[in-house]
Amino acid sequence: MQRWRKKVLTYWVKNAPISHDNYDEIRMEIRKAFKAWEDVMGLNIEEKESSNGMDVDIVLSFEPRDHGDNNPFQESILAHAFYPPKGDVHFNNDQNFRVEPGFYEEINLLHVAIHELGHSFGLPHMNKTDSVMFPTNSYSPTRLSADDIAAIQALYGEKTSHTDTREEESERPDPCDGRRIDAAVTIGREVYLFKNKWFWTFRGGRLHTRPRLVSSYWPEITDPSSRSA
Image (tube, rainbow, N blue to C red; front, side):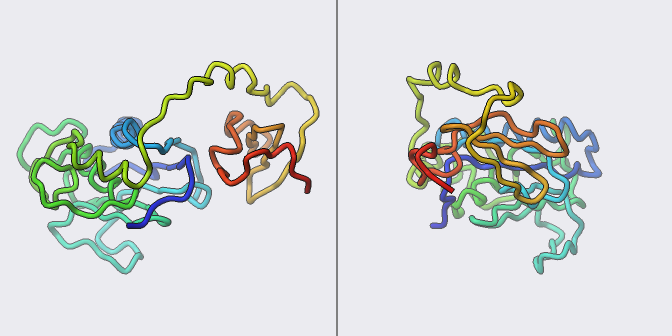
């Protein structure tokens, strides 16, 4: 099975469906779907703002039947997703997606998102009806089964709790304190700043992401402060 070769994934919710055009509510529901997987596996997930999706790992969008990926929606298809390293999720905008469906013809967005994100993380369909990866358009659970958890942990390991979190938080640099940095790199519209084992980004002169561990994005770099340009 295909998998992501990093410890942190970023995503962007591009738009909301015509059936439920409250963008913030859609974002919250997508966040719940990511959290269902994040809570049991060794990947961290972060939402990012984006203008075109080129600077995130996974873009989630609501699309018309023909949407330019050579995979047009058939009438009964709710959504489709791409395996890593692509990972994008396309929802069929002709479907009646709802955050809290109250009628038979309304579709539970949370279930569909959890299922499609399973594919985005590298999981295939499963033939057990209690699995969120069971291939069906009918009502299905929004809680991962034991088989779902075992499958995702086979790819990314178990969720770990760091005993040194408090220590790391105390070491996190202030991106605006003006002290010397170790390196700066411009990639596209973002400026990446590095200090010891931390990095953060600016975009348009404004802080875009708070300081994060270099190892969370580039695990192969174990001691960034010892590297020279």
